[in-house]
Image 1 (tube, rainbow, N blue to C red):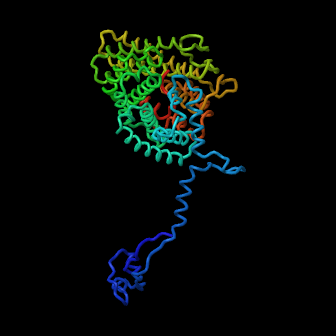
Image 2 (image 1 turned 135 degrees about the vertical axis):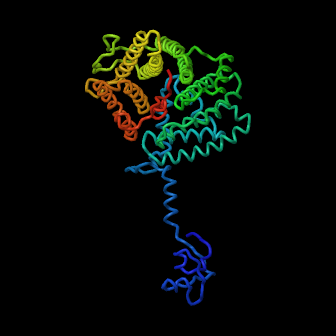
Image 3 (image 1 turned 180 degrees about the vertical axis):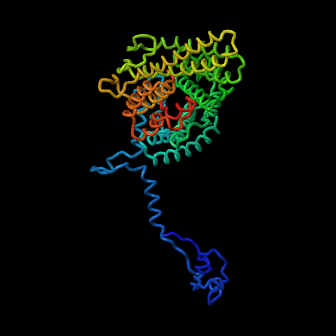
Length: 483
């Protein structure tokens, strides 16, 4: 029962019609004019109490649904895991356990499980990430609602944390802000958004600038800086924006502080950043030759970097792209090797596309159009060769076509992105596109039903897809884009 205050002095008919009642004792004038029987007036001394039991019970049950198992079974519900527990186990199994040493979430092992309960910001943000990942992979919308509530609480806790210099300089504070940037991306995709400017990246840059030079030689701090580099570069590529000057100054600070630049991941992200700057330079550059020269230099750097990767068994008989690719895929020693090779191929394809655009600009204005045309054809050939290599890294749906290792949900999303890039290259040959569709069907078998809608966007050309390749990655990617 809920108390709703004193009753209105007007008659019921006037309240229904939302007009002024003159409250005459024998019946109001408004009812007389309308030919209605006046219902009279309630006593002003009465109180109004409504029965809100059912509505209140519904709200409570909705709130408690996240604390109960998704579905009941023959066992007692007290023995079944809650949604939050299931979300935590799913996230840890996908991102933390058995991840590569340089993986996107590998440094989470430093912070999780928490050593104490005196820092609620990190725990709140981690729980939000658990739930938004569960909503994405399992298709459970109430988990997204709960994740947004936890995210709102984490924002409030972050404001309090940065008011204290001591807390602002903690690794856990920076880590929480990085997780917020990941959360915004995942939650935006769940709401069917394509890409938003990530405001938390600016905050992470400013926090790192305050933390001094020691962080760049510390293992956890160095990994978080590389992760921040990846997030900043992808954000700029997807939104076609310049690399922030504050980040460039931070990167220079890292170099002067003696950061380890020998890792393949650092080299790959350095090339990605230079590629992002080149994309912006190409828009305003008058000289196509300068853009082509820089793009070719980056492509050569990627070719040298690929020599550092583990080798694989290729089924191609010649360097020329086969007209009908092999039914069996190339053999890679593990999924991480396959992912690294394909990430390099994707970036090289983008560079070669940029080179093609510049050669197309000079055709007709060059003293040697025959040379420009030959270079244009060579760029096309190499793009198709790289796209073919991507296709050959993923099996089709035939019985004799399989991978020697298991592929998880999040890994299948990465394979989907690689195939999307290859599919954009094979825009016209019908046979090649049918071949890619076979590979996409293999990826579909590895994904949860809740992820099939995104895959259908790629399978069917009638859907409106983002033209920017990196927006597509932010939409479907669930891993780090690095090596």
